[in-house]
Amino acid sequence: MFPPPQPWKQLTQIHPDQKYLAFTSRFALRSVLRVPAFMGASFGIMKQIEAASGAVGYSLGSHLPGLYFYTLSAWNDEESLRAFSRALQLGNALRAFHRDMRAASPFIRWHVRGTDLSLRWDDALERIKLHDGQQRVAPAN
Image (cartoon, rainbow, N blue to C red):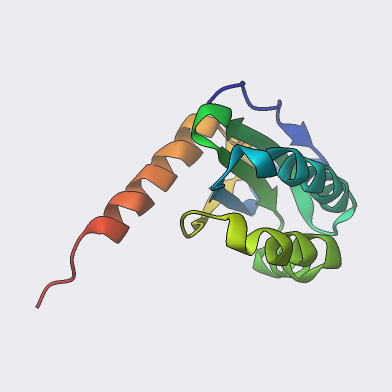
């Protein structure tokens, strides 16, 4: 990633033996002209994450030469993530930038123990890469 992603921001105390929901996503913009607006919207979404019930921690990243933007977050459970996803700021941003995306955005979930937090970008990027590879495989007849 370039520039390097922001450091992991822990929002609540981690319980080592608790199971958490990890989440990562990628957004691929069509045009560099939309980068400032997209980054501006991300600041509002960061505030929303920090106020969200059930948010454990997060980091945002990008690869500006490729116009890719990434999220990485941990949640208490699926319901916490769903409530955040339905919230106004995120919903408005997704609608506002829908036509600016050049590819479908993967939304990937997996479970981790508290001992595995903070989440690592190398793991998240590998999961996105695996997801992309699975999407390119033609279905069997």
